[in-house]
Image (cartoon, rainbow, N blue to C red; front, side):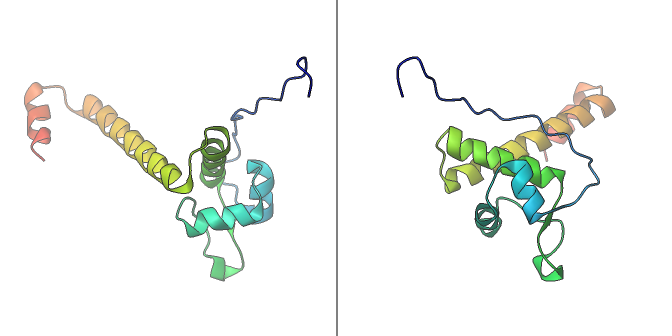
Length: 122
């Protein structure tokens, strides 16, 4: 490669499928740009979950799993995070999302400072 050529930069692309769609492992691999074997490794490591049990005729994934696969691939291949680190990051992201939802619900439902103080005790 000479100095004028640059390697292409991969970025996380927007994925907005039908939320009710279910994909085979082959289709999930294609949509997430991940090999089938890697999906199985991620499944065994608890990083991604199929919507149907593998014993029921194969692995089937929903849009949330496709997003997870893309995040995993980005963390590992673009940022160099290993499987253990990826698992921790995904768990922390999920906790942050849950906390944001909780704060939003608290803001919508409680407006007095005493309500917040009572909830803080739990």
